[in-house]
Length: 175
Image (tube, rainbow, N blue to C red; front, side, top):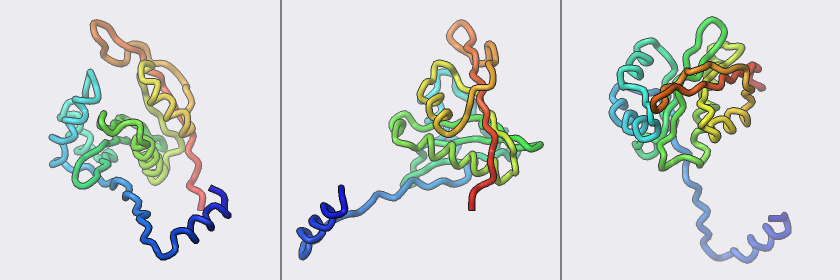
């Protein structure tokens, strides 16, 4: 809408109540062990070959950055990042199937990238299935580039699927 159209709309609305409420963004917070049952519901719904609850427990015990996205107490997604020796690795990013394609994956990836910077990582890496074009497009749009392929990395029905290895150099946050 152009400025004069906005002004006309404002004049027309004078004297009337206009509801312009904006829904709040979901909240990002650290994952807790008590979240694991609900997280596993999402993991099992989203992946044919999901991580086990034990893997998530191990990530928490190792001190990895494990974050959830929640709205009204309901988990919508999560992400896991390991960071050490000047680099970071995004290990898992998942959004509940009913909430995909709404920008929540991007919100999680950006949080993980911020955490990688906080850990002073110079680079961040991840693996993604070639059969997941939406994730590949998201990662490309956030600045990742393909740097390699890991042959037979992922389990698949009766076989193995390669992984596309992606990476990006992290710049310090702009102030």
